[in-house]
Length: 619
Image (tube, rainbow, N blue to C red):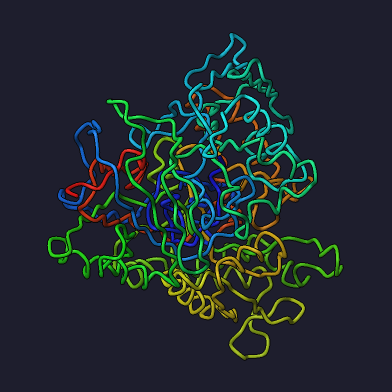
């Protein structure tokens, strides 16, 4: 599953979802993708545009708030009870194949399984719908043995036909806009997926594919429910929020029971779920999950304070309010370090036009500004990131310079170009690029006399992002840019970013993870989520062509150190060219009600990575 999904939250990984809590997955924040989970990029190049090194402040958590250190051994739980979460956006659909936003994947993650899943404890792939596998001596052919005891939640057996259908008819279907196709394509070549028998599938990759097993967490969808819609060409509108919920069929621990727009999504226990505990009891233990849809994060906090929800992802400003209430309100706070995702400004560099109206997506004079790396570098130097941390995150945050989070570990490159706050340097770069105040009105104009002004959007439901957006507006006005800042409803923002391309600048976020290749849907020039100019037929710039090549080479390289060299270069290139202008990473802090057994939060998996084993204790 791709690392990039659009998310409503500031920056976490699918907890980095736009809802509060959930198993580990990879998504793109909306201006949060997520990326449940992060990637770091930057390029020093010939001219030194910023300082190299990592000076990020690192707030430390007391031992009482650390994640558990003991080895996890699940207990046999008891059936019953609900987990109640909150989400600050309605789902756009219930279709995980076409989802680009965590408002959808935060729900579908409980409904569907992949052939593997990534352990929230070890962060390594482990069997799911596949019980075992072998790889041939050529390193290209993988034989996947499926579980024989799996049923879809409508009672129909799961077979190899569903796997072949998912990859051949959905992932590799050019008429379906899925980011998964970016991940499972190497140098334009697809994987061969073949049914060997009812419970065995063969994958043959065109070249060696280093993260193959990790990539098999791609959700598998039911052929018997969806083949007709693919044949008719209606798949992209199938499983929308107005669908009959009984038609949305998965193999995951929960299934849809009710959806009330702007109110709640209710999931119920899947009676056919295949996992069992050590005594043979069918999981999950919980009767269901209720996701309350709230208008903004402040309401989410209020729901938690009043005992109406069981999980809350804290903003920095919430910490001094909630910390003294732990014992009285019966919850515990966990602090697990920098969020996995990334947060940034992105300027629209798409030179295309609307196929119906023939209108250009972006005003030509703005396109000229936004495609000038000097313009973007000036903006990067103008941002007072430390004020964002101090004022908005209450000091509980980290300066962000790269497209991978420090929490990503091995592939994170700390030696990227840094853009420390320096408004004078920003003004000098603008002057050198031909931008100056030509009429004394306080705003800079380009060489043709056009005043530099543009719109800035973010999602209105996230007041943290709105506050950061306001700081950015003021910072850019300090260097002579007029910024019209307008928070928008989340799904409206997603439509602008992914469909209409009707935007100038967006404050965005991506979920992230430890495997850089799963961000290919963002970084490859042809990617569905190459936000500044998506789905390019050929790279628009030399540096984008080099990143394309890096991703094609690195995924084939099995030596971890050589892979890291390639991904380090990718991160350096991005910091030089700044297609994404990074802001700050919040510390990942969350609170969980003291009512659950088998709760074992981790930095990789969040609070509920083992959702099927969680139970309500003391009932």
